[in-house]
Structures are given as structure tokens and as C-alpha cells.
Image (cartoon, rainbow, N blue to C red; front, side, top):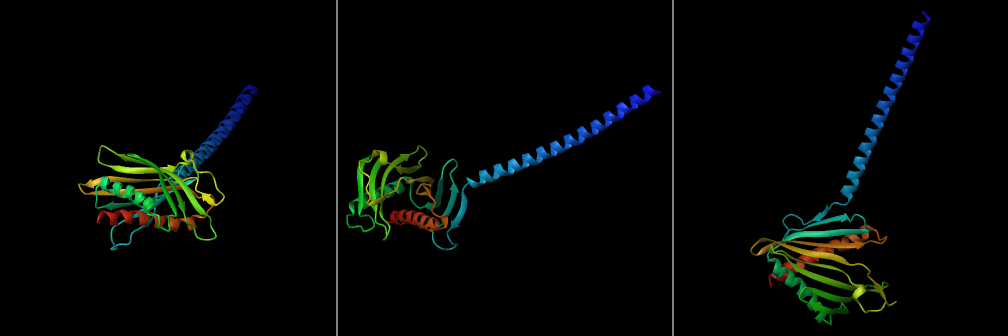
Length: 236
């Protein structure tokens, strides 16, 4: 009789432990599931932050179309803005227009916007420039050293990339100017037909604490002017 009671007691204890372990297992599984969902949602949110988001587009019925996008660049403090639109010209023509504009500015000594715009060195595929921008009082004038690299692809595409090139410059740091340490971007022109292409112009920079709401309108204007400049030049 006693052995029977002992056996029943052990079975009861075993059942209790089994129930406790079952509850613990379900709780752990639920926590793991919720944690996995949180990590997935966090991963999606981080991924989304580095994808291009449309921020402005041309009004309907007003001239040639364009769309502007922005994003953060993962692993850096840089933001990137780009404009896209079609141009009634071949990629080769567009890149010639862009390069000629740099050369025209370097030759225009009376241009008030660029008191200094020098082509330091030039080759078939590259330009090294030194530029001083005239800024409004009380800001210091800004200086830049920029390397442009041109390319043509086998599919008929053409483009140019640029980046800061102070390591190639012989210009000494001056207290008179505010040196632009980073200046990066690109133009790419992809053929759509025999005499038209899809154009994309992007610029990258570190805001360095400057509010985005202050920078955004200036960047949008810069990108729109750049696209319109090529569109207007192609028709001349």
C-alpha cells in the first residue's frame, strides 16, 4: 500500500514538473518569437533608411519632367540627393556639354560667381580643378579641390564622377577661406533612343550638424539647375 502511494506521489510530482516545463517552454518560445519580430522590424526600418525616397518632382504640365530623391549612405555620415530625368541628346553629347561648362567657367575671368576657377591639370579622361566660391557676408569664401573622372561604357552610356582631391593639391591651407573637405557626386547618362538618354545626377556630403531643412532647398535648386543647364545647352 505504501509503495502504491509513493508511486502515485512520484507520478504527481512528475506531472507538475512536466506542466511547469511546458509552460516555461511556451513562454520562452513566445519571447523568442517576439524578439525575432522586433529584430526583423528593426532590420527593415534600418534598411529602409538607406533606400532612396522621393522628395520632390516636377509639377504636372510644366515642361520636361524630373524627380529628386534622397537617402542616407550606410556606414557614413553622408547624405545623398539625386535628380533623374530624360534629355533629348545622346550620352556623348551630354558629357561634352558638362565638360565644356567647366572649361567655360575656367576661362570666364569676369564671372562674379567664381572669382577663381582653375583647371590645374587635364587629360582625356580627367580634370583637376581648384575653385573659390564667393559667399555672402559674413561667411568666408569657400575653396574646393575637385578631381573629375570621365567614362564611356560599351553599351553607349557615359558619365563622370568627382571627389575632393586635396591630397593632389599644392594649395596651402589659408585662414581667408573655408575649405570644403568633401565634395562628391556623379552624372550618368544612359541611352534611351538614338538621340535621347536618361540622366541621373547625384551629390553626396556630410551635413556636419547643419539642419537638413536648411540644406535641402539649396540642394534641390542645385540639382534642378544642373539638369536644366544641360537641357538648354543641347538645343543650342
